[in-house]
Length: 192
Image 1: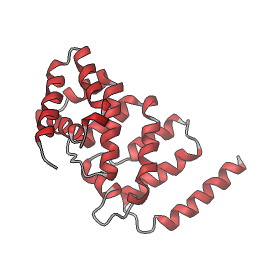
Image 2 (image 1 turned 180 degrees about the horizontal axis):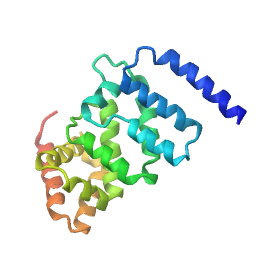
Image 3 (image 1 turned 90 degrees about the vertical axis):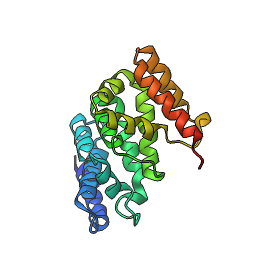
């Protein structure tokens, strides 16, 4: 117990020197990350981390990809990877978060690309839940989620995309699978 307290104090000291210029949303993520880092298997701390994570695209960008590349941008990978590491334990909460982010998302590389790949992987492995969550969105939100997932340079190295389509067909979500196929065709016609 004493070791955990010492580790927590050291993390708090490091964080306090790093968080002096962080916005409130970034500080929430850092605090939840530090608590979860001490006890990664604690389900309540995992849910707290998910809740502390930015819940909309504007907030996500302000934390992980601001124009000046400050806030948590330099270490965005560790924060997003921790979120991904608890996906199997909280698939509904993670699915809700990722889909809510993607309803307004636009690919911009770096942190946005990491979220895009995380969402694609989630969609391929939790297709039934993904379809249920996506079908609860408005048509324009659904279209943005599909377009966001489809926005890649090369489908040859993006096996998750075809897995999503195949899985959607398997569960008889033909309309969604057709939306993914259409988005891919449109994306392949665009010139970079």
